Amino acid sequence: MMASASVRISLLFVAIGLLSLFFADIAITSINPWKDLTALFIGIVTPDFLSLQGMGTALLRTIAFAFTGVALGSVSGFLLALAFRWRVVRMFSAFIRAIHELFWALIFLQFFGFHPLTGVLAIAIPYAGIFAKVYSDILDEVDPTPARVLPAGTSTFSAFLYARVPDALPHLATYTAYRLECGLRSSAVLGFVGLPTLGFYLESSFSQGFYSEVGALLILFYVLIATLRFWARPRLVPFYIIAAPFFLGDGLPIVWGNVVRFFTEDIVPSPIRNGDGIAGLATWLSDLTLHEALPGIWNTLVLTQVALVLTGICTLIAFPLISRHFGGPKRRGIGHILLVIARSTPEYMLAYILLQLWGPSMLPAIVALALHNGGIIGHLIGKRSNEIRLRPDAPQGCDRYHYELLPRLYRPFIAFLLYRWEIIMRETAILGILGIYTLGFYVDSAIQNIQFDRAMVLILITASLNILVDTISRRVRQHLKLRTSVTCEGH
Image (cartoon, rainbow, N blue to C red; front, side, top):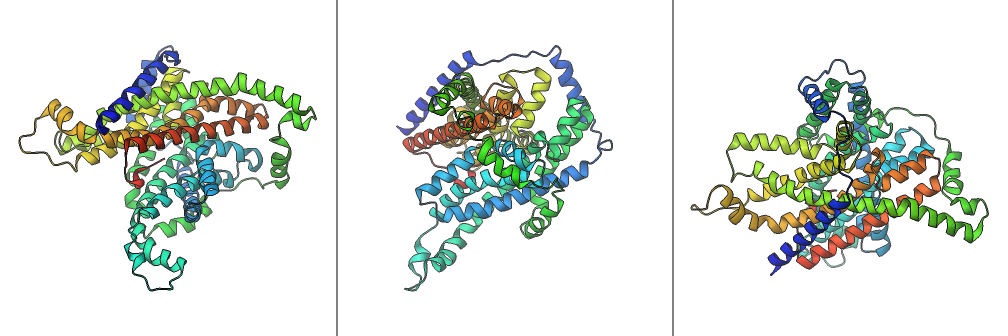
């Protein structure tokens, strides 16, 4: 019964995705996209590492922002997780994680400028909300038996420290390591708003047509992610965390008067600042809603639903690449490389590259979202498939895929896809900064026009939309009784 319910939900999402496709702006508008793609491919296979000035500094700062931001986020998230049973804490955590790192960076840039604190807080704040949710789930799943055998009169703190933390620690460490990988991607992307990380140099090289430099930067980034488990060993992590703040670089001194003015004047709606009263505020909100919020919400939803369906298709194609039930070690090795590239490339970075090659439309964003998220879920489902034992006379080829593996993997596939739904929504909104008419486009336009009051309202709408989608996703999962390990609920 639950299998048929999963299929019905899948068909509903596919139908919504196909309907959204009719409203999506999908086109290749560049004059010669194949020539540009060929030039990029040649640049990637002929990387020029020697011409990149400051690459070592950019690499160090990318790592430093990631470690500092994730460390602050994990500590803050753990403290929030301890009080997660309180509704106000859950709502606060949901709100801060619903706002993308780039939105946080755009906010802090307005009063901190290009100070290291901008990048650190842009990572730490949303990650604190993510950590709070996942750490709370991990602690709730701890076996309660050890706490029952503690001596009478043991304090609550001692019971927590000795009965719950040791059991949860491996899962906490595993998830924190995963978030560090995400932090490296977030840190690199912060370069697109001017911070001195790898994304800054990638954008500069690409805009000048230096594709060999682009290839070198991409390869360096992939190597950084792929070798993370070798150089970020647990015993070295404390050293990295202590050293990271010293490699963040310098910035102009923070003018705290700008901070005060931002919160007391800049983000206050202009009708209130100008004394136009309730009537002026109503007109202002009406104009903002009709000309920016509603078009942004519509395009965000359309792009999200198309990307979600395409992500599912990419996942179903991708997971056999690393499954031991299809092909030998050599083919699986190539599959692992392809999925590492797909899931390691941030959606924003990939969408930026495709926009330069194909021209402005929703197509680059859809493809970027589908490849990245399909790579993540394909990797997880492929690992699940390797745990399945088939009978000796199991069919081969397509029959093995359709009749043996897919029915057993379909429920976790749907669970992971629903987990990624809200994440795809967050990324869809932020991709508007690249010129796609999602909510991020209108946020960025308002900031460029120094209309911070309009930008903040649009950011709040974006956060509310993400929370709504996350709530729907959670209820659908509960209805289908879908469950995956909380450590796999990656954002």
